[in-house]
Length: 142
Image (cartoon, rainbow, N blue to C red; front, top):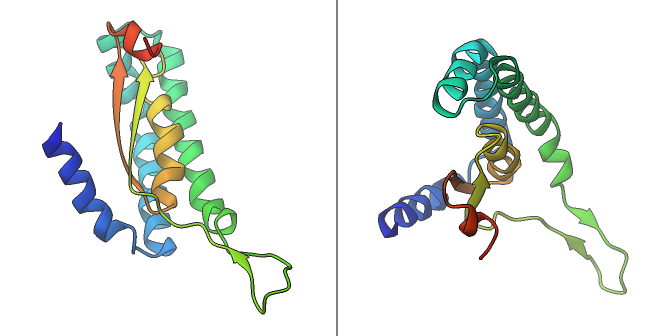
């Protein structure tokens, strides 16, 4: 675990400075891969966890839609916001936080990861995910 955290921290130190244009390019490419291989990814979900094939293929397509959404909108969502104050200039600036860890349930193996990683990557963060299959107590927070 320490090694994975160190790798994420090292990746973050460079990735956080990547321009939106580069993040957008990578996110759109991710969407293209998901769309182009949704049947393959669907079969993988079906084989590994027993998810119905139609639902699994739809899940991969939904992930592609999410990637495209954040590729198209994240820069606007994260733009500086001017705030009226007595100061000469006040604004809110959104900056990357760092490596983000997500512990996810198993029933939507792709979507659970993409719903946190797509906006996180577009914001300049990096992430790691762990799925919960037989660790229900951990997922429930016990």
